[in-house]
Amino acid sequence: MPALPLIRKRRLYRWARPEPWLRNFLFWGGAIAVGLAAVAFAGGSDVALAAFRWLAQHNAAWPWIAPPLGLAAIAFATQRWFPGTQGSGIPQTIAALGVRDPAIRNRLLSMRIAVGKLLLTLVALGTGASVGREGPTVQIGASIMHSLARWRRFPAADLERGLILAGGAAGIAAAFNTPLAGVVFAIEELSRSFEDRSSGTIYMAVIIAGVTSVALVGNYTYFGTTSAVMADAHMWLAVPICGIAGGVCGGSFSRLMLAMRSGAGMRLAGLRDRGPVRFALGCGLVVALCGWLSHGATLGTGYEQARALVQQQGTPPFDFAPLKVLATFATYVTGIPGGLFSPSLAIGAGLGGMLTPLAPSTPSGAMVVLTMAAYFSGVVQAPLTALVIVSEMTGARALTLPLMAATYLGRGASAMLCRESLYRALAVPFLGSAHAERQEQRASAPERPAA
Image 1 (spheres, helix red, strand yellow):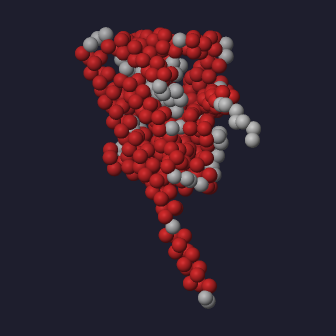
Image 2 (tube, one colour):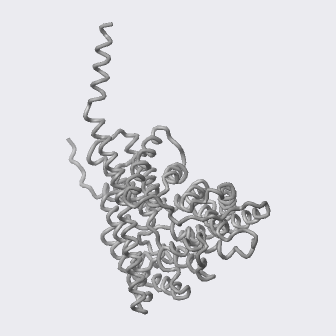
Image 3 (tube, one colour):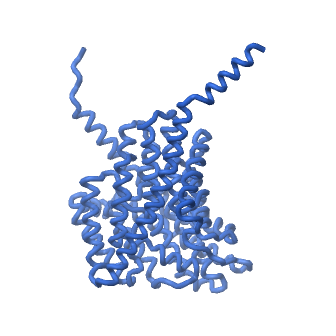
């Protein structure tokens, strides 16, 4: 019996210790900061896109001037002041999860990179580049959560995986207002595994960041809502059409992106490495040309075109999807910061609009949503993430089963053309360059004299 008060005192001491509470407050504050950053990023993106459209309306030369000069300036700033911010940011986050050296991880995730990622992506959107903000939000969220370790010591398990996974998941959840998709994305794409020690951290970060986003901008569906249903059995003919076509096109895009590592792609990459600013200028001219051919539809994220197709409120030009592919590829190969999520979803929606005549008995909104999910699944080769993201973004609850079938058909069709996961393959160069830089610093460091 005398031992009972002692046990209670020990429990009370553990509960009242300041260290765990301080760590929790820092973690909660980091999750709130991820939500605030995502909301600020979204607001800034809207302003940047509106500014581009306003200037294009008042100056016919602006859509020709802004992409080449803008991409060249961003390429210069990326090389000079913000190395590590290139691309979508998801490959850097995956690479950071695969290393244990803190110095290498700090080169992939930091507050400097987060700030540069946000600013340069906003400038890219303001110049009409075909990029999105959702992938960069993943790296920003992971950088914010990872930086907490510098302020307060966290347990090793949280530091190595939990915080980075939670930050990336919270970034997706807040960017799309899709909390379930944030969790699924972290499990399926970022970590490719589920660890019990990280699950609670991910859930809590997603909840806090999501609540912060909803509190500021309200609860909404990213692409609006669709009332399309597939009530009759013959409408299911659209599922293999959309799934296979979307997967083939998504896999072809991934293979095109990864072709920079061999053959003609290596020669193109060599041109970029020898003169990144000149190369970006030339790619900007390609983006401007695509914008002119599509009457401006391919400039920017493609969000408005995809939303109109989902809600059956209009259709972009018939050649929107192929021109958007070219504009997205030309933007991404420059190495400037910017994501692939929004452009990929827009391409998938445009492809769905092209496929609508093949299944006239199926509502066009259903064709668009199914192809959007299949194409996205084909690009990222993560069918569950594609299913949840598209379902949450469009409110297409009535299409859950067709969406599930289309995403897995898309994944299978994509794997026949591109056996590698796009983001994981793109993570390898970042990991290699960070290791090489670390080795150079170690080699150049003065040797300590023998004792």
